[in-house]
Length: 112
Length: 118
Image (cartoon, rainbow over all chains, first blue to last red; front, side, top):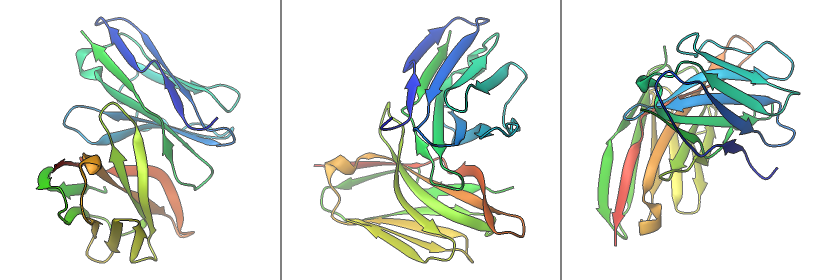
């Protein structure tokens, strides 16, 4: 596609519910990244996928967070049993290997 | 652990002024440094990327410099316009191992929120 797309753009959920956030990377990009931007904080790295290699999950804040990438393209970030501190903008980026990262518009998650 | 700091956190200037945004980082072993722009409700747009071997990059009214030894970068915006109003983020990519390849992770500063007043 022309750019990285994410859905939904906004998500409001109740505490304790599970949510799924989707990312469609730029076609042909083998690397995919998830970041989180909390109010007043910088962007923090969550997880990285590269081709068929095992993902680097070192940035995931808890075991309630998981992500998968199907067919080397679309990725889903899942947050189970959401907490209010999970409220943030979740950004996805993709790149070619070692290339510049291109970011999607983000999903704004609000946990009530 | 790499830390990136941006000063000031917010800046308000009248239209037409030239301005400088500052970024500092603690670990000079970087692969490259990028400046991004973020508009409200939107993702990040890459403005300039400076490789570790470069001193500056220019694009239109924007000029970014890099002084790796002192751990600093500046983004210079000439003749500011109201359309330049946004949050500007600095991000560094760490040099990884002896091969000199770049780590995939970007470490971001918290940004400078710029308002250009007409």
